Structures are given as C-alpha cells and as structure tokens.
Image 1 (cartoon, rainbow over the protein chains, first blue to last red):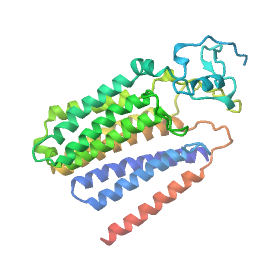
Image 2: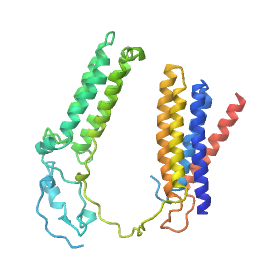
Image 3: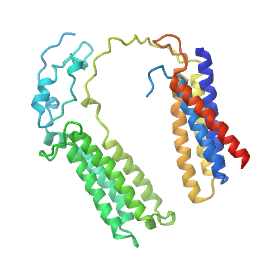
Length: 60
Length: 291
C-alpha cells in the first residue's frame, strides 16, 4: 500500500508538472480557457500529490 | 525536568502594561542539559516576553521596518501617486499608506503606551495588521487609482528592480527573530525520530527534474510576445515553478517515511483532493471537447 501511494504521488507530481507546462504554453497561444483548465488541473494534482504523503491527521 | 531559578535577562522583561502579572505566570526558565530554554509547565505557557517599549523599539526590528516601509513607499508608491494626470484621491491614499507603514512599527513596539486593544489583539498583532496588511492594501489602492502612471512604457526598469528589492527588504524587516521564541516543551507522546542516513531512492532525480521543469516554465513565459499577457505569464510561471519545487521536495523526501500510527493509508483529505482532481479534469475535458 505504501509503495502504491508513493507511486501515485510521483504520477500526480509528473501530471502537475506537465499540466503547468501545457497551461503556460496555452497561455502564450491565447487559449485562455485551455490554459485555465490546465493550470487548475495542475494545481489540484500538485496538492493531491503532497496530501497523499501527509500522515493521517496531520493535515495543515 | 528539574528547574532552577534563573536570573532575569534583559530580554525577558515584559512589554505590555500587565507585564508584571504575565511575568509572574511565566515559569522559571532555565537552560537544560542541551542549553535550550524550556517551560516547566505547558499549561501555564505564556507568550514570549519582550523588552520594555523604548528598548524594544530601538533594539528591535521597528527602526528597520520603519525605514524599509518608507523606502518601498518612496520608490514604488509615491512616484505613481504624484505623477501627472493622477487624481487627488490617489495622493490622499498614498499618504494614508505612508502613515500606516510608519505607525505599524510603533504600535508593534508597544508605542504609544495608552493603547489598549484587549487580549485578543495585542500590540504586536495590531502593529502587523497596520504596518503590513493596511500598508499593502492602501498601496494597492494607490496603484489602482494611479494606473495612468503605471503604463509599461512609463516604467523605469532600474527603478522597478530597486522597488522589488525594497519590498523584499520590507518583508524581511517584519520577520520575527528566532531569539524571541522559547523552545516548546517536548511532547511526551511523540514517537522517537530515527535519523536517516540516506535519502529515499530517486529523491535527488525527482528534485533535479523539478528544477529543470521550473527553468522550462520560465522559458515558456519568455516566448509570450504580447506585453500584457507576457507579464501574466511570468507571474504564473514563477508561481508554478515555486509551487512545483516545494511539492517535489516534499514528495522526494516523504516517500517511504515510517508513520507512527501504523501502515500508511490514504487520508480523507487526500482522497477528497484526488476526487476533486478527477472531477475537474473530466469536467474540463468535456467542456473543451464541446467548445
């Protein structure tokens, strides 16, 4: 279980990094809705990746 | 832990008017075997005592905060408020901002003495509200009212860079010194923290990749041609880079860490975050496809 959580956290971190990158690319291409969507997905993925590794009851 | 009556130190003298009562409740603090100061009874723990107001003002951070606020105001706020074609309201708000920035350090240092704001809002907290929050809010209002002075063509890059440094110094001037706090008492229920000789596997590659991706974000922001959009892109890129670096550091060192409460499981908060991510990702993808 612990390894699965670690792997999922890394996957989410990678997804967040890609989403941020594509979001910035879309922002430069004047695709505002796509940029907003990708940045939001990146933010949520990044938050999920760190929350997964946080100990239970230790949420801040 | 046995405590020994310690001689009073100059920085242990209470700041507020009820300092005497607070000092009575503050338990005798003495250096333990490791040289740190601890409170013998956590139930009677009191806020860290400060020096008397004049001493705290002269020896503390108030002069630095006062000068930093004035410098940041004179470099970034005043030129905008006193430019040509700026309404008088902007000048008035700019003066109010300066007053807030100057009053905050005085209030935080306990000056003037007669000010009593109750137990919930001590002088230090009130000073920070005035010197930081109110100062920044009024500066922002000034900039909004004097937007004609803030056109990119009228901005001097050198002055903008100096202004950014001035605001950084202003932020540092309000930071708390570590010496003001007392070491909290050890938690008897806390588990032992074994030292780790090595980092988890792939910790360095994960952090290194995050640094490279952060650089890529900056490069992506530089490829934006539209000036207004480019400024937004740089702000977003910087925020994303900082956030990604922090999260990558957390992920790289938190993997495989033993938990004191048994095997690791997914917490309810993490589950909610993942479900929200899935919902937003699916909903946004459907909207993108429909558009």
